[in-house]
Image (cartoon, rainbow, N blue to C red; front, side, top):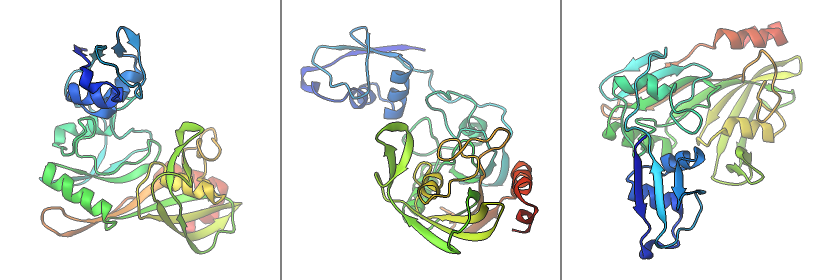
Length: 297
């Protein structure tokens, strides 16, 4: 990794390290945070934290990763593709984009050769929205800045329709319901998210059926916060089945959450597009292991 250095100017004293380094090194703040976590950024030869307030005269040394994301042969089913957008059916277990602990082997590595682009973060070219690593299902990515900006605007305007299928622990949910509660970083454990703090988040659900102490639901997102569905359903006492973070990890079972339907307006032609994804075989099998009636919904 190439070594980059700079000296903090007196006029920059008091700035946060991550913000200053991103500006001076002309890279993203997320990349700076990642190399800090990897202990590849030093101040006067010592390890630093992102929130460090710099002092004039300090020497910053950073080893940045080689520029560009390498394409990799990772199987991903393409549902729709044209010159402006790409819709894929992401498998469970695949991280969406490079980040701390996942420098490669991501969805972006799998698709970078197909022209995904747009946005300011070089680690997330064309990534309009994300799915958790262990969530399967439909995602749309942009090919170019115009498509990216217009798709992001649709997300912000809450006009993109995203439906998920989930099995949750417990019975007794109302037939339909809404969880309207902010979602943000857990102040006691920043690796997790929690309800009640952070940015506004709205999740709607509809019960399809219940059996054996579990319930199958369809979930519709208005907003797209990190872990939103998992946090909201756990907050009302019905965590997603086999959720290792907000419920209970179960050996041999994966998180029962699937992005089943995606609908949006084509960012260039204006055509309404809608896509469906079949429930994965391992999810069907784990639902049937709970009760055969889950096959009906």
